[in-house]
Image 1: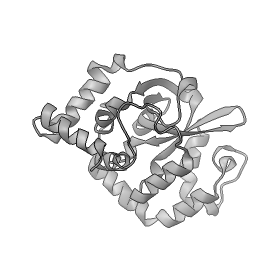
Image 2: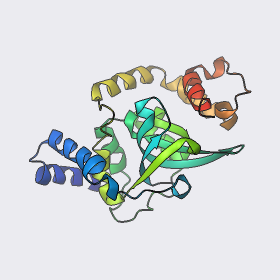
Image 3: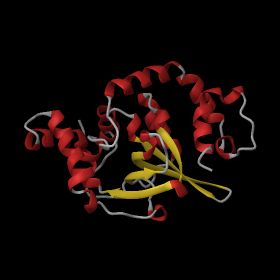
Length: 222
């Protein structure tokens, strides 16, 4: 195990009586209730690639409205700034810990993931079959941003916003369903470019059949 998994285990033992459910509930209460106002509030312009955030997005879908994320890349399309993120709402807690346990160096350097980009994040997620957790956001539609310090990463990844239900069984069902079309979706993702996702004048054809719902959601933000 790496330092992230070790820290999680240590905190579960010392802070939650060796009970993972207690640990999860404590983290939710601490981050999203008791100490929420202590999390630094910033503008989208000050968001940094490779950093972790909780955002409130203007979206009717809870999983897309209340989002624990890592910002991985920026793109510009016409007058819009697009933020590419890993949306942890779509990834089970155990996978979140396993992913970052392999690459986290310490709990002090806030910028250790500043080299992150779409390609690196996609490759990391692809290993676990969760590449579909990469989500695009129109930064104009983000209503609130709270910065998560790296020393809170263990608690951040081992929690979820209380405004939505964390359901590992549902996440597993989604994963199984997505796994069946993983090769085709990967092929379509590698072919797609920024115009495919954001240009409403482009007609969607069967070449991007598995991305249609995603593209429609993104274009609905503009």
